[in-house]
Amino acid sequence: MIDLIVEPMQYGFMQRALLVSALAATACGVVGTFVVLRGMAFMGDAIAHSALTGMAIAFLVGVNVTVGALVWAVPASLGISFVSRRTGIRLDAVIGVLFAGGFALGVILINVSPNYAGDLLGILFGNVLGASWLDVLSVGCLAGGGIIVVGLLFQEVVFMTYDASVAEASGIPVRFLEYLLPLLVALTTVASLQTVGNVMVMSLLVVPAVTGSMLARRLASMMLATVGVALTAIVIGLYLSFHANLPTGPAIVVVSVTQLLVVVVVSPRRWSLLARWRRRTGSSEPAAD
Image (tube, rainbow, N blue to C red; front, side, top):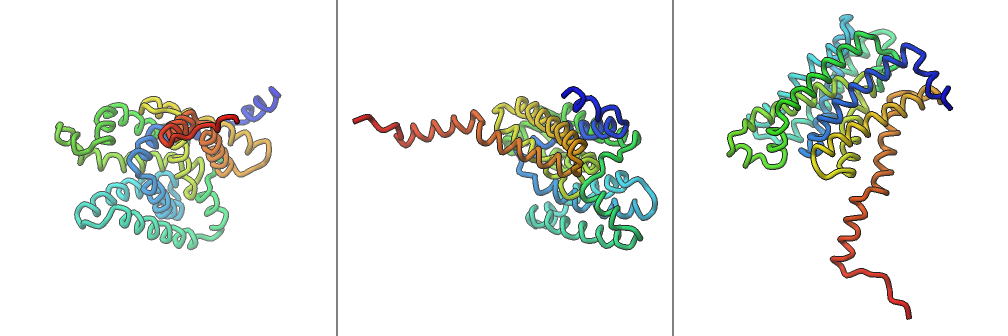
């Protein structure tokens, strides 16, 4: 049993994969909490898919794809809010356009490259086992930057998350924060691309946060639970990938979703809500004859 745990960590590629994944999971846990509470899940997915264009350009010119994704994702995240505010177009409509257009253009650009099939699979579904120490450093900078910003503006972001109008009346720069949150989503999305890939990045950003919301009521507790759930999914997914010869990104996602399903069944909140509903409807066990 001990050998099953120790053996994978004897390899450098597994050590780097664990570090990259843990950094990405921590950032996604922190930012993903606000993503779920603010109903911004689709924005994360759109930014990840549109970042494929930046990754494709970087791949074609021989630059690190993480750099390309970042250069594309940051303006895209800010542009979503800007276009919606200036034109009056619904935010979800702007996100949908970015989602479809960016992803389609990225696929076309990758198709230009010879031997694109294998590279496209790596970009779409992640290649965390191929992470270098430079990848560890870049993901650490992105994840750390996002976490630091949330820590510095935690009270303001929490206030705006729960009641934006009252927060604005209290002097909190709500408009600035409404641009900042998409930017944080972009940073955490790019940090996660190496781990689970372009297609499934939303699962790492959203699924642990939904699970955390089932386990805790207070926001700080929910955030800690979310980070714990994400890290657990990362570790179990990596070990499953190593021992069962499974693709790493999908294995992590399956573990994360399985965690959510288990929590939905056994969550104390679920049973509390059920008991409250039964009291409200007057439901009770039938009396014996």
